[in-house]
Length: 314
Image (cartoon, rainbow, N blue to C red; front, side, top):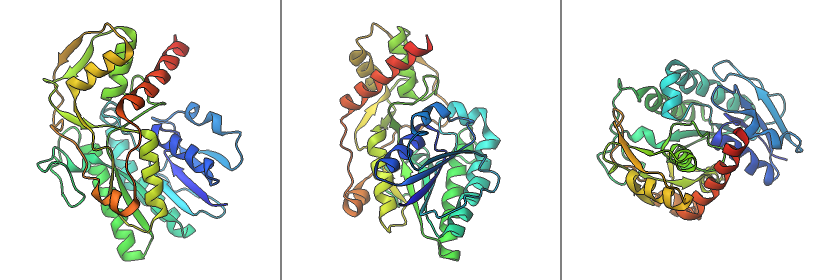
């Protein structure tokens, strides 16, 4: 049996990755300090054969006794609400945390997969964004704590590959949504879903013409695993080529939820990207990967989960 370590494994994407690994027969050591993740995300996995949860802060060295075939480093705040609240911790886990995860992979002889982000492209001047694009990031803006933490993580991962011969890969994850997102996450889709289901106005920032490409978490996890199973070092874009404006996304969610909510425009955040869409040619040609879940299907799946989550909290 293969055995993988997933840092940030109790987070949104991390918990789905843990579940997918177990489903294919890989034992999982889920490492999380629960700063932004929640044990509830993996509680249903705790009784499954091969699953182990370790509460640990990745800014400190970590030991995982026994064989390890893969280290997936997902530990990080990911939503603006979280990384703006935790700026130093976000920078620390992107730097110290990445180094500790890399050194664990090195000691174990494991393949290392860094979960990077489309945010390394900043507010892009090239559209769609291919992996060769270096990005347009404000290094001292409010979003820089996340953007630069991930950019440094990519540089450190590349250095370990080049200087130490470690088997590494970098996946650049674009906007992902699905069950287990927190209703108070702060990102557009969970915010819109919560507002639509509670009858509040949907708060669209700016004039709503800014775009995002949204990918269901099941497709994102398939892409991460496809890269892990390959020998490709990345960086590799994993995201949906389906691009939608925030105004149109809000209207679609109101329609799918059967909500009477109105749309209210609020101030747009500083350095908020105007466009975002991945060029997924490399993933398609190298991994044979493409998203399978349609936007309507994915949003309805997420909507159902949010209905149940809000009912439980009420």
